[in-house]
Image 1: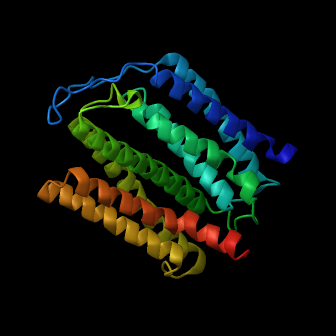
Image 2: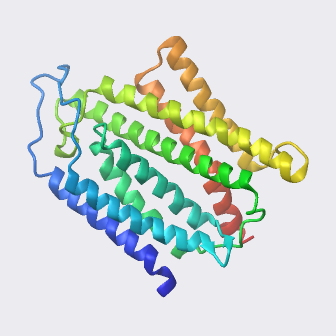
Length: 284
């Protein structure tokens, strides 16, 4: 039980904060449009609530401690599927926390924090596997860090796309739930989405490139076509096509949201999905 305590504490902290947000956001009055087709002008900028930001910062430190205690043990690095899920969500929450100082990301909170509560428990539920080989290579460390940042940014992008889809449906009906009130206009949020995708795509490209270099350095051969690598390359191609469509043909709206979610779904299969099948389903 003591080994699971850091994960349990992190999950409880995220869950309690999500419950607090739900209570706070549902107390305010939901705006109503006079006609279904009317455009709603909502605030375009939100100044961070310092008490909430400080609280989330403390939870992040707790979560980082739980992930660190699982990953770094006995001078080695352990990264099983549970730890990978928890680490990706840790990076996702950290990016959200930082971004919330500059942009209105509050609508994402009710998606981010419940997911974080579940993922924080993943190492306790799914266990920690054998140590990662070749942990002494700096290239591996750089590759893992860049990959986690790419996963974190593209996770935020996928959650942002889900929020945009929900907001678009609600605006068509002429009403907004209280939890979605106060968000920026759709065009502003869509612009923000593509900025996140561009940053995530750059890091994903760096992940693929560092993977190629890392494989060559260790094994003297280029990147092999494993399930993880194939899914990663497919995801990279989807996001590349999405950005090309955006900048060349002006893709936006539902088509952009679908491509974002498809790209993220394939990326999720690339590492977390593959490790889940290998470690949990097949028990290897």
